[in-house]
Amino acid sequence: MAAESRVASRYAKSLLDLAVERGELEAVQQDMQLLHTTIRQNRQFELLLTNPIIRSDKKKAVLTALFRGKISLMTGKFLEIISNKNREDVLPGIAAEFLRQYRSYKGITRAQVITTFPLSPELRSRFMAIVAEITGNQVELEEKIDKDLIGGYVLRIGDRQIDESLKSKLEELEAEFSKNPYEKAF
Image (cartoon, rainbow, N blue to C red; front, side):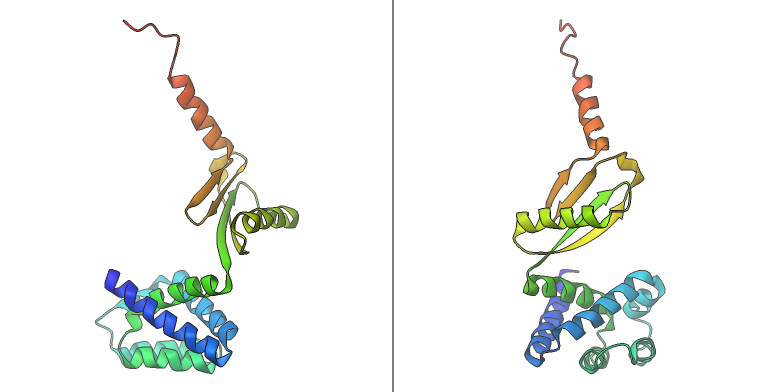
C-alpha cells in the first residue's frame, strides 16, 4: 500500500507541476475534484478501476464515457496516459493526493466542524475565522452533523481537535464521579 501511495503522490505532483506551468491549475483542480467525488460516491466505479481482471481498454472506455466534455483537455490527456500505462488502479489515490497537494500549494487548511445542526452563515464564518487565526491560512471547512453530540461542537484542524461538545463534557463528569474520594480505603 505504501508503494501505491508513493506512485499516486508522484503522478499527482507531476500533474500539479504541469498544471501550474501551463496556467491551468484551477481547471485541473476542478477535474480532480470531480474524479474524486465520482469515485467516493460510486463504489462500483472504484471497484472497476482497481480490479486487475478488467482490461485496461474497458476502463479507458468507461473513463472516456464518464468524463468526455466534463473535464479539461489536459486532464483528459492525463487520464489517457494513466490508462495507457495500465495504472487506473492508482486513480483514486492520485485524485485524493492531487487535492491534498493543491491545498498545500495554495495555503489552504482543511478543517472539519461537527455539530448537532446545520451551520448558519454567521456561524460558518466564525468557525472559518477561528481556523484562519489558528493556522494563518485560507480555510476549507467541511461540515458534519452528529446528533449524538447533544450540543456544542467538535472542531478538527489537521491532527488537532477542539471538543466543546456536551457529550464529551458529560463523559468527563462521569469519569470524575466514578472516582469517589469519600470511599474508605482499607
